[in-house]
Amino acid sequence: MLTNTRNIRIEWGDCDPAGIVFYPRYFEMFDACISALFLQATGLTKHQLMEKYEFDGYPLVDARARFIIPARFGDEVVAETAISAIRSSSFDVSHRVFKAGVLSVEGFETRVWVARRRDDPSKIASKPIPPDVVAQLTKG
Image (cartoon, rainbow, N blue to C red; front, side, top):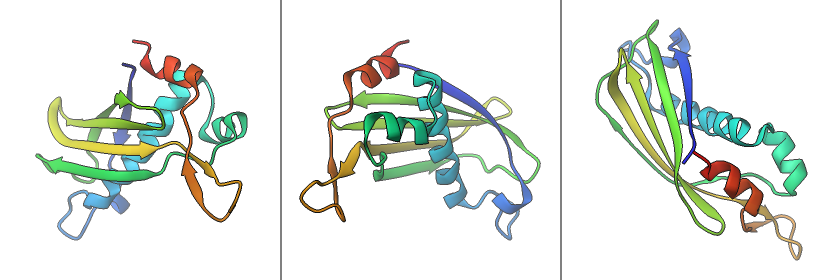
């Protein structure tokens, strides 16, 4: 499967009063990493994907993380993001964040490709991931 790598500088606003990255910030990083992975795979921004494939996003339905080594203000970390499984309308994502080459954080997510329901546009429902998107995400 395709893997995307991003270099991330830890900023002051990423940190809690103890001076380490406040854990929800990792999930924000993970979300940006997924958008970057889709851009790498398809050449389209998230907004362009949503317009082209007439869907409303890929919301998070399950998430967990394992925090191993803290990162602090000024640290440079490297985040590796990969799709680890693809099903009809959902996919699993793994994230690995390295600090100075050492695994610092592991994240795991399940997301669902969704669109507004035609019978009730105030609600969303899963929608099959287009085959060409699956092909682009699974190329190595």
